[in-house]
Image 1 (cartoon, helix red, strand yellow):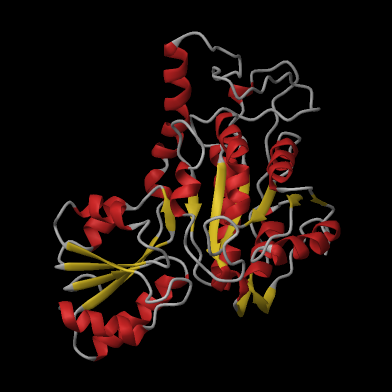
Image 2 (cartoon, one colour):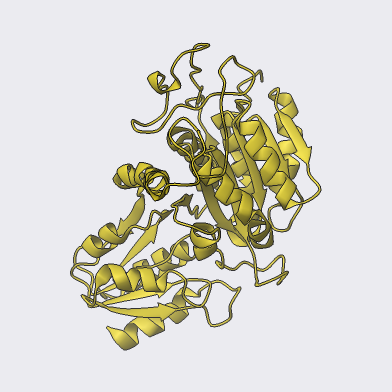
Amino acid sequence: MGETGMTPGRHFMQGNEACAEGAVAAGCRFFAGYPITPATEIAERMARRLPEANGTYIQMEDEIGSIAAVIGASWTGALSMTATSGPGISLMQENIGYAVGTETPCVIVDVQRGGPTTGIPAVPLQGDMVQVQRGSHGEYDVVAFAPSSAQEMFDLTVLAFHTAEQLRTPVFVMADAAVGHMREVVTIPETVPQMRRTLPETGGDPHAIRGFLDEGVAPMPVFGHGFKAHVTGSCHNAYGMRNVVDAEALDYFVRALKQKVARRRDDLIRVDAEATEDAEVVLMGYGIVGRAAQETARMARQEGLRVGNLRPITLWPFAGKEICRLCAGARRVLVMENNLGQMLPYVQAALEGRAEVIPLPPRVLGTLHRPAAVLETIREVI
């Protein structure tokens, strides 16, 4: 197998297993985590796979220690990740903000479950959409992808590592218990481009080194490789030098963090749309709910109803412009979520009254939308 850790070919595997394989294929060589349903299989797989790929796996005492270890490992040059569920994300929030502020690349997988608090561990719920974007204090933006299949668990985990390294920021993979636990065929390619950090020369200017990083993102020194680096969660300049006095310094600090994501916004957005051109009604859902929306739209088309479907793959940055364009001719947009409406206000804001936006949670939270039941609603509103 060697250092690449690749297992190319067609596999029948769980979504969580595919996530772990995507991480190893992308070059992840450090995992720190704490077992939590429904994400535990990712840790179990990484515990076996990382030693095979000359990597390191650590089971930490809790989720706070896990994200702290991931941040530290990233600064030693390792592509690093953790995996958890909603309660773990809650515990990680302070250090997630620290990772944002210190511009530390890492991947955080959130396999969502029923909440709030401990909730029901094995019941899927899309309850963390707002938490990952707004859970830590202050002004910042994150990147988050929402897979709807085991194959996308692999593909989007690879993409998450590439994005984290390019933008020097935490990137989320937001699945739920249904996607994490379903088993499907996953195709792993022969090769996956590996992210390799380019290190500055000893005594040189790290800003002269670009590597995989986007323009406007300061290159990342690596501890122990000959370049003095200052890392602080306090307000600092592009060289990491602390300034907690001047409002101008804070303005630069905050805007730099947000602008590096904003500059890549159009490249980051991924939306899967079908039959929206002439649709009177557009069904919108992400993750596993997006598959229910797709199936319902196809059933409606068979009845001659002009129904399309739209699945945001990128949750953050939010695909407001794309939603507005793809729903331009629709009279009604049905927002399908396995929650009480976390995406709903963002869709309403994007459409600005151009179409009636109707929330459509499942009849029982924590269960999947039934296409036949959704189709009944479509017949009522079309």
